[in-house]
Amino acid sequence: MSNGLVNGSYTPEHCNALFSVAILVAYKNRQSQLDIFLPYIHNFLRKQNIHYRLYVVEQQDNKTFNKGILYNVGAKTAMEDHFPCLILHDVDLLPLDDRNLYACANEPRHMSASIDKFRFMLPYDSLLGGVAALKSEQYVAINGYSNRFLGWGGEDDDFQRRLLPQKLNTIRFPIEMSRYTMLAHPQEHRNVDRFMIMRENLKEGYEKDGLSTLPFVSVRISHHPLFTLVGVQL
Ligand code: BGN
Image 1 (cartoon, rainbow, N blue to C red):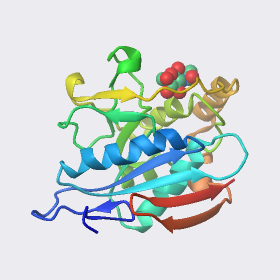
Image 2 (tube, helix red, strand yellow):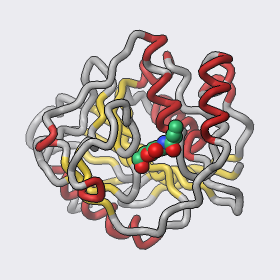
Image 3 (cartoon, rainbow, N blue to C red):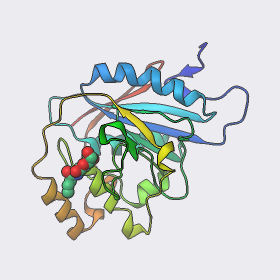
Image 4 (tube, rainbow, N blue to C red):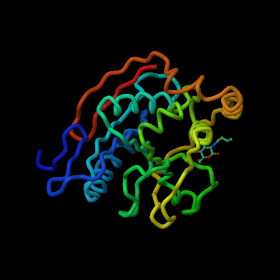
């Protein structure tokens, strides 16, 4: 293909890429955002001279959105494809600074610290939601995402709390390099159970809920020029 993309995968032509990265977008029913996100992110990423593959992990049922299950399925798929680095990416966030390299560091990195919606300020220090990069081995070590959160809120904070027992810290690039714009959308319905689930998981330990306890879901992989579609039915 003339733009060098197959299945959402890109390899730079004129150099050997230093980084090999799987970008996972947990997605449900936001076609208008995906239509903006896909061309934008490919144009952004191809300037970075990295090898990457974009996976859209789509929840294809009428149940409430479960971002954690989608990320766990996406991470498994990317690891089967031997990607050592995962970038977990909201579909409504567009990076604004070319220096924000889409790659993994030694510690998990929160990439979207500065979003226009929050007036380019970090809302709270432990935030890891939005866009985050971590090594596949780190994702496995923290047992991935919780499978228990439905709808909006808390799942990313639960994910952040999983780092500490593994002696991992969140790192960030300087704030000016971490800028994003957020595509407008109506506020999602907040999950009223989120505080309870976070408390229970903290108390009971993260090995009981996550990648290792992923419930059975139907997964269907198909290939499109701009992305690999991982269709999931809960
Ligand atoms: C927080 C949400 C996150 C969300 C950020 C940014 C909760 C749990 C509270 C204990 N956390 O408030 O999920 O990513 O806002 O919007 O609701």
